[in-house]
Image 1 (cartoon, rainbow, N blue to C red):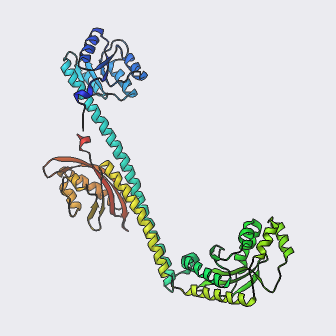
Image 2 (cartoon, rainbow, N blue to C red; image 1 turned 135 degrees about the horizontal axis):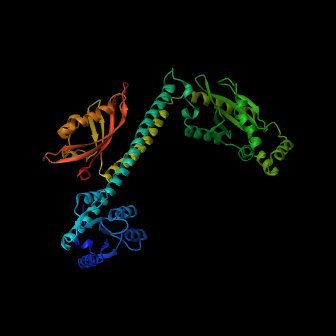
Length: 500
């Protein structure tokens, strides 16, 4: 830690608080001769006023104690320090114990007896500046460490949450895999979107549409469209764009498709007067969706143009554009429609009997990759936070009596990197007078019903016999069935400078 050098103090402004004019003039002259700028206040009230006004930047206060009428030096010092954090040195002729003790109740950086000479006074001022700078540095470091520790706590909580999400995700995927792969699996755990490969089916239906002109779709039982090809403008640009006509579409997709036996199909005219056909999609005996052929007109019938014009007026469609969309609706023979629906019925059987294990396994891997990416981000945040604060982080597993830790952990004990770290390693490095209390803190926390968090200061003895102070914070993040802590995470930092 760098202190104030002699050149650093040149030009510093000192507020000299002295009620004796002659003494003040002499002290001001001496201080100016060694390079300081001096502002004089002849009373405590005047000194407080000068600091509060802020007209001059005050770098230090030299405070006499007995200031005559009005507040004394200790009261003035207290008021000044409540306004500004500034180094303060008492300069007085008093050496009585009671008076000196009174100044100790106020943050100050020295007590100089008057007439000690400018050499002693200048040295005391320079030392005060060094101590003040050191104090500010320690305060800033403490704030950085506290902020980093808070960041580490957030990162640690996110890490725990990510691990829990991963566990839940794996359990969910296992249940889905069991539902697909095992005869006794509960198909109620599955949705249609969990089972089918929509990209492959989309490509298959597009090829069939290009070959035959027959359009189709696969919807789940809630009416959600999963795969669709060849949908006509009369539906996509008109019927499904108006709230009232859309209700007819949804009724067609859900209510009118109920009760159709497996491997059969149903032909019906929807309430928007378009022909639709549906065959159910079954997984085991569970109805999970429907395969549709829709939005067509039989080639042996003529659409009622006036009926559709009336629909356009009812729903507010642009009439001629709506009729033009109607004329583009494909026309099929009953034989073509019958062949198409048989194809789709057979397709639904194939979907029902497909092996879905590979699809679910790929989903599980994708979900794991996303979770691992989130874990990496959280771990990286934790690493950066600890590096900024000079913290070492660790995780202790009581079930295996082993610890994982950051690279700088062992050095805080004065040790080279250890191949293995256990409780015995910790206690061996701990000062003999602190071993019992340190072990007690840990045992109390991991005991059933113990507090999840603990913190304490302790000493370690380096191999060269030097002694350092460390602060440790720990948190139990997992307990066994009996409530005993088995996984503890925490951080470690050297606080020797604070202790000294």
